[in-house]
Image (cartoon, rainbow, N blue to C red; front, side, top):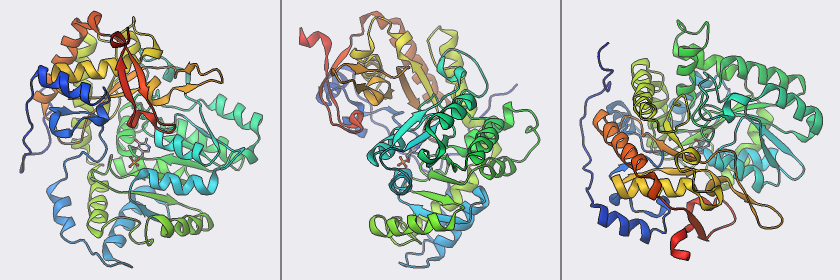
Length: 460
Ligand SMILES: *Cc1c(COP(=O)(O)O)cnc(C)c1O
């Protein structure tokens, strides 16, 4: 077996700035130990997110020059619409400036007090938009998905039993929509199987509940189906993707993920009446329905990117480069979510730092150590991102404390991945010296973006 190489050559480069451990110790303190508050130029390898950070292809840049910036009816919109229809098969295509704008529009209409939205696992902005509308969001992840160390092919699946039970318990009229996140971002980037999408769809349809797909990583999910699910090995990517969407009534999409765009998203659906309501809200806050808050050139980048996302040589390299980091970490005994998912390596911070309890934010502690040691920026997905307080003010933690190292698409090479691995291994060797954190300041919604943290030992 030869090395699986990056399926592109480099045409334009962006220098990265080197810093010392001393500088980084100061920088992260000044950023209140919140990686979102560090300046990008102070980061060596930026794995904060795979969102909007992709390297665009020469074809995407070329298409951008053809951007038609007409306010209404721009030809860029029609190329965008055709590309979205080709992938999703949905007749109603509504551009938005990013995924959360599609979510806000959808849940402003479908959400509201007393309603419950069911999901495998809701992404943070999705949950926030549902809760903002007054509705509640319920995660019904399958059993395998709850154990980070368990190796199973489709740990992103929704529990069909739980879905059925919840619908019976709450009653279908209280459930305006069920949404499947593919791949399951907050649940470890794990894929959802075709069988699971099909079953969820049939349960929802039997109760008259629409099924939506949070489609940010539809191509990565489809590639896992091709690799792991019986009967899909010889099917073309486009067919697999089309089948996935065929079970859904609509989807929200952040084009900043699998579509390699730096900005953009959409809402696509089948129901014409609902799409009219959505467009009315779109006009009020995003823009006219043929641009939805995007420039014509952005629509072009998405239109081309959606097609490139289905290239199998690319997907093979993409999935392999993440698996490659995972293999080396597993071999050294570093606890990670297994198997590795589609867009990120997730460190299990609870097992990595067993001495730090959830209310001292082990994920935050691990992120700050990775930054200090290697200039790597990662993100906590645990008690800081998803923690809630009960009526007595006590922190209620989510089941897992993870640190996500998200890989921007087509940006870093194998030697960058080697460096990341080496930094994690060095951190693992020194894990006994790492201390926890307390929150110094927080906001009521999406607190992880702005929270300020204080090292526990400084409090004493
Ligand atoms: C990124 C993301 C979103 C939100 O999209 P934005 O473009 O960041 O607004 C929603 N769901 C999932 C699963 C995501 O990864």
